[in-house]
Image (tube, rainbow, N blue to C red; front, side):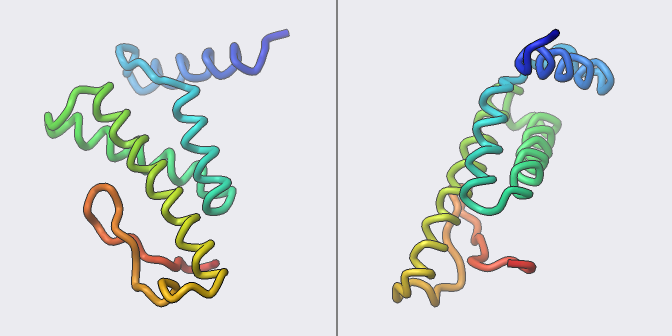
Length: 121
């Protein structure tokens, strides 16, 4: 019987092959780590959404020639992790009744505004 790690590595290889991305090196532990931060900092369903958006951002940067694969992936993971942690900190402040609770959003590492509240919260 295969271990979870072996299964994930095999699944990753199969997906990469299906998308004709065999040359791409995916750090599975990094992806899972970012998914874990999103799941615990926002809500559990934020994990797949976060990793999808980070992957999309990576692909767009690579396609535009803005960064090589590894650099684009790491940058996207760093941004996703940072935004999730900021979201959790903002929510904690809002729950504590901090004066900052009335702010319209927070600044993300990419310099864009991230809304404090999202539909369905």
